[in-house]
Image (cartoon, rainbow, N blue to C red):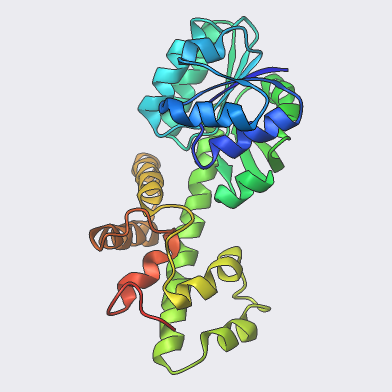
Length: 290
């Protein structure tokens, strides 16, 4: 398929790479031209100088950018040159409101827009093992499924436009609570004089087990946070969650509290630390060793 990809960051770059490896005819664009040029040197495909150039004549346009305004800008430009019947697949985590707006705008132009946020982080993007939750027209989902499958281990159609973003919000609510509990458990074990590695072996095969425990317990215990999903990104996501919660009347007390804990981590200088850095605020210093 003729595919364009907009946004070649830590997630988008590997995802576009999987599409090129799968044999799709690729055009790419990134706001920082150097990233697009570097991508084109490493993969089959052409680096373009604008969104419109990357989108022109494409059957499917995927994007993985920063926020609602970025998505609006890309979609408005792309719809000027996309052919009728083209599908836009947005992997950005945004508000459900902007997803609905873009779906209506695309429909008016004879195209389709799918909100398709992802879970799995940078490691999942590199491995082609992302979980993708999709909102939008089912016929468009079916058309996009073979393309998205190049970097997905699972994908689910959640309903009409915006449903993918709402599902991603539920995902982030779960993660926020789990990571805070894990941070407290790690630091508690250390202060109690226990060996964190032994505690992990004792509790990780029972009801406390989680992906976060398996992948972040040891690094939390060592005070290592210079990797992974950045606190700044998590706070952006939780802001979307809390806005939606206020709109639909949800009580998100734990989520709101954890959001404030992440604000403390930002104030400590941890804006780019992994979300597991919630453990840093529970210690005298952000790099206390186990």
